[in-house]
Structures are given as C-alpha cells and as structure tokens.
Image 1 (cartoon, rainbow, N blue to C red):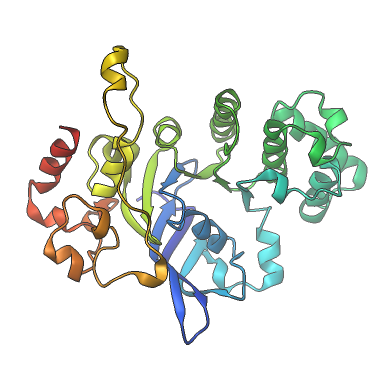
Image 2 (cartoon, rainbow, N blue to C red):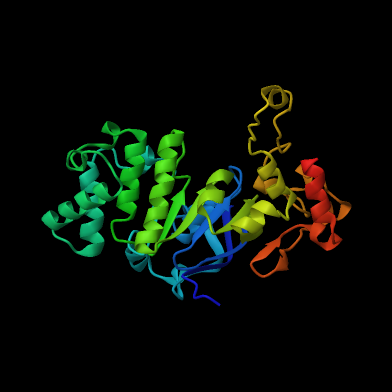
Length: 340
C-alpha cells in the first residue's frame, strides 16, 4: 500500500445545539497520497466545502463542532493538536484556495502585505526577503506586472488575477496539501483553463497533493486521479477517475454525468432534445429519513432504499453507497436505461 499523506477517517460534524444537533458530515472517509489530485464532486449543499473546513479545523464554532473522527497528516492527528500548533499547520503544511477570493482576501491590505505576512509568520523571513519571495510567487502564477500588483489592493485586480494571487498566497510556504475549493467560480472559460493548467504544473514541479472541490465533471475528468462523490453530507461513491466516469455505480453519479451538456453536430437534433436534469433538490439535512438520502430523487428507487441507509458496498477504494450493488447486474442495466 502506498504511504498516505492525508487520511480522514469517520469524520462527523454537527451544527446546532447539543439537544437538537444536525449532522452535516456523516462518517466521511477518504485519503490522499503524495502527488495525487483527489476530486470531490457534488451539488451545492452536499458537504464538499464543509469537509475542507473540517480538515483545517475551521468549522465555525458555535454553532458547528467536529464530534467524531480523525484527520491524520503524515500520521499526526490534527484534531488532537492545540490551536497554537494547528495555526502552524494551516498555510504551512495544508493551504486552501477559497471559493471567492474577494471575500477571502482582506480589502484593507495590499496583495504584497498579505503574502509577506504568511512568509514572515511561517518561514521566519525578514521583510525584504519576504517581499522578494512574494514577487517570485506572483511571477510563478503568471500575474502580469507582478511588481506593480504587490502594492495594489484586491479591488484593483480582476477576478482572474485575484484568484492567482490567492493561489500564490496558498503556495507561499510550499504546502504538502493544497485544497482548491471551486477555484474557478465566476471566471471565464479561458481563465478557468489557465487555473487548471497552473494546478497541474504545481503538482508536476513541486509534487503538491491537491484536493479539488468542484461541481464541474469536466474539470474532474481533466485533472483528477481519483474521485469522491458526496451527497447530503456523505460519501456515496469513490474510485479512480476513469472507473467512476465510465462505469458509475451510484444513480446520483449517473445523473451528474447525464447532465453534462453534449453538443452535437446536428443543430436540429440538438435543439429538439430536452436538457437532462436530476429531479428535485438536495434535502435539508435536518429532514433526512431512515433510508437513502437520494431515494426521493432516484429513478431506480426500491422499497429497501426508503427504509434502510446503504453502507459503502464494493471493493476497497472502489464502491458506492447504493443497494443496487446487491442486485448483481442492476447497476449496469440502470446505466444503460439512463442513457437510452
């Protein structure tokens, strides 16, 4: 077995009072190996971003709290560290690119100040050294006129440049793990492609392990080595990117793939076909029933799905939380039916 850089086991997060808790992450397990890109995919509200916040121990408390599990980085359980020690880990060993750079960057400090602050705090550089390193970082993420950008404020930068500045800040201490939470939200497709190329370059040059959180199945296909699909706070499917995209086991994963827009050469044929969708919405986490949380939206639902919650079924590293897996060829038949 390859040595695991990050291993998350049985992670549970609750919000609300202790008398009326709501489980927002329910027994989440995953791992990350050195130099690997793990894609975490699902609709909004499925628990993707909350998982990343739990790994960094940034769950807002109150009302949230981690009630169970472990997060081990190179064998050290981060949940057992003191807050002072955890502050050394954040930014230094694990860094995060947040979903919206305009709210993550401090509007009253320059880009250079925010990057050098990290370098002085974690790398013990003096001010001139930190500024030179900050300039190198902005150059490494291909920001135009990097010396000028050091003295500018976030509002003076375009969305693409702000995102690159956030990536530069996240990479300042050359972290072992980089968490990219929807790193291309609200960016045009050209800038999206540039950001994805940059992430691949980071992995190739520095061996950075990346957790890529997204709802974009195209980004998963292009970048990820393995995939974890989440729904209603649970992991419902995992496997290598090729296996999951070509042979999905869970109807929810099938639905996500079916919703990827396929543009055909025949415009008349394309315009006459209705856009596919997964009916319904992700359920409120305080209203989940006893059975599978996806059952109300699933076209293959069985009576057992409504009364019993399925565990992860299948081989280690390749499985899904779906009772269809107990039905032999039912999964393949369900997939063929969905494509018909």
